[in-house]
Image 1 (cartoon, one colour):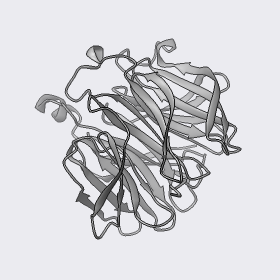
Image 2: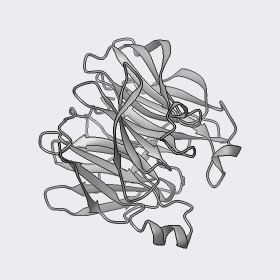
Image 3: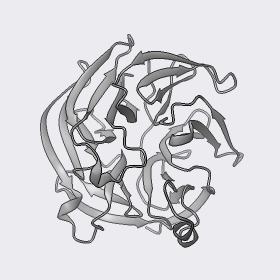
Image 4: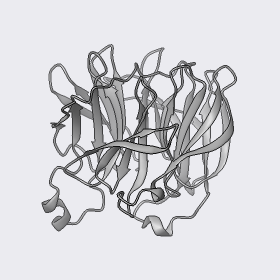
Length: 306
């Protein structure tokens, strides 16, 4: 294996998040969270385009809909983006209290959307975040919202095993990756247990926290290390780090597999709250990266069916 990292979109975001690969168009969708921009990177043409969809200042998720358009988050609400060309946004559900914001979201294999929340932490040092103020929700296909977990500090990455029997989930501030037994039909989670915690690894910087996550077809997790400058491949059965892919900036936010055969790993990053001196040291912060030559592959991303 000989991995190669390249910049595919340079400095495109203040805080890039929520990468989603659309295999039908060979496009990567992602967001610039704090300025309400959704991006579309066309891997065939190399063109990155964006549209601004409001003034929520916390846009954290964009997932295509089976019926056309997208489902997006806007601070406390979920909404439909009618189409890329129209830019029309219609709120469908207020999910959270105004003191919180919605964070990372993904669709499961049945087409329901899972999305979690956190206390509104913009501009606040993580050491001062209010703990256990967030929750994990599902947006059902009938557009009803169900609370699935409470007492989450900062809801983040999600992934499911290929047979949909296990759901993996990150609570960022405790630096914890969890696993649950998963019932795809009911959308229920149970038997919560720890997979790993960043605190157990002395080689991971003390300030590094787990952020977004994806899974490969071998069942190994790929976890973004925010303030650690890495994507970590983790064996969920042993909780150990198999390997680390190092990037030329520290604030790595999330990742997903893409490309024609799902062997490319797309990675988002952030430049939020960075000083000019920090930007000079890591000038590629806020860029989108592509990693090739990993020797693994992912699977087609799920879309929202409602």
